[in-house]
Length: 417
Image (tube, rainbow, N blue to C red; front, side):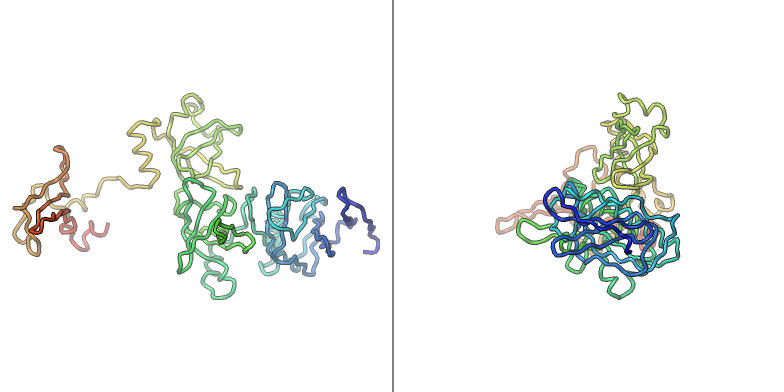
């Protein structure tokens, strides 16, 4: 420690900065504090100190282009990493903290902290450390090119079932994505049906429409202010509990520098990067492929800007009635396969005649003016209307619907369908 060289140099704007030469095997972080400035300096080292170093909750890390990262808490507890598992090589990253969200700082480089979080976690597992021994939590406020760390599904179920303070930080619900603005998604929580906004692909963490997810609400500093002065709570998906979405969509292929991109008709579905080697030769002609409706499936979503996929097949030509109908069926996951014979046999025959027992408990309107408004070619006359003048001069309009459930026998195969 005494061999360190310490010098003070003046920055371009007249502010004092402290620069220390640290031996590579001593510390991974140095927290430099004084009354006016606070910095976190990342050192490229191969050893984590045994003592606990914490960054105050609520600190702000500001980056170029107003991309901000909220540091909730950094706590590094007793973990030893050998030189071959060196965490990083760069020693030139500085981060200024405790500045209001939205202020830019040209001195701040692109953080390596998001990568560091995953690396620390992996090394913790490799060295047999539990989550309690190594914690590195970063919550993303604005769009970054990295997903937040996910919690394993089984572990999340345990957290939700427990009644401790940890479980109160998490909520579950169904994800709803705005079809007009896919960057905005919502999860409704609590007895008051409060909507929590999931802002951006990163915080959505690979979840798609109708997926059942577990979310963690961001600190209040990350909430969005509404025009009326109130705040919209925001959060991030930490676990996809149930993948309800099929991960398939209907769309077209577009030329791209990496080969082709699959663009789904549903804007809530991400762009898929398609490897040209997986495509049939006829799909590679730009003049014809844009006119074809294709089925695409998501394969891997490693980071928000890179989602890979594959083409499952051809639906038909864009604009053709049969192809468009088939596309709607596939997009909505509809089952249009014919009914099984066991189901059909429970239905009444086509030449069924109404019996006297069928009229018990019903009003007989057969002698009233009841008529349909279907075309002459219609065969399913299941609704009708009537109009009767009342004694006070008013009119009574009746709507008559076929009682299909009358022919549905309880506990029959058709009833259980």
